[in-house]
Image (cartoon, rainbow, N blue to C red):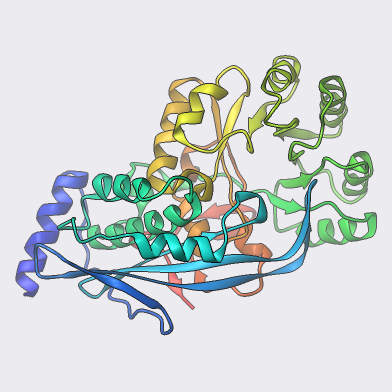
Length: 386
């Protein structure tokens, strides 16, 4: 059995990433207790593919406030995809605006039947099928996508940034997010970040925008990325704010105006002295072409685009159109953050601090060292289950 499996992995890996792929002994992991087993898929080598999942609530270290809501927890579903003793990990994180819930994700996962596929390397077919099971449900789909990428990376014995041909040394600094709050709390959060991060991200879009920035500037002169979360509705006001922000050392703007005002967003982008990135207006691959000309760049979030497979395609299409790219996140464990981080050596900005905002991370994965994303050399997503 071991010899057959070794031959299968070698053949499949050469067909997937070419003769230059390195093969290591795949890491065998034991599924975590408490997972609800879905079913079994008989594989060509006699192995089994098994999807399991369980709900998990992410606990935030601080109240998190943006232009439209505040929260202290985020619902989440943890996923495992096992093949022949090797486990791939995934997750679905569901902040309120996505419209998904623990119940909807569990319902979606219960409908997924992988029995039609005969090996885990049929990634395009598997994930196209998963996408077709039901419309929407992008975070639920992302959980399977992430777990499959982790599994296949382990089978290949390589991390995904290497499979994609990227240099991990080119991974950027990640921003650290400061939500909308009182001046005292903003000052405290900024002091916590100074010395650990080289760029901050600030949520704006309410009536205290200038106070937020002035408070941060009283503490540090670090570069700042601003996310208005659709909070500015008048385009002249948005443009005036951007000019003011540029004078304060802001380096980019995310979603200044509502996604329902595409012409106003395009006008702001045309006149803006700073790059403007689509966030709420940007979800899936089919949206990228529409963003061209209306925004300087796009923000790719795995929970919105169904995962790594589509995120990689979005990145390459945006680059072909001459657009900038950032990779972002929700509140997530190091599982989904490490998945998104595999893309990071190819982007202009990274906002991958979601795992740093929670107190109950289940994994160790990508690290932030001196403000810079530092990817693991371990196969798959580079995860260790804590």
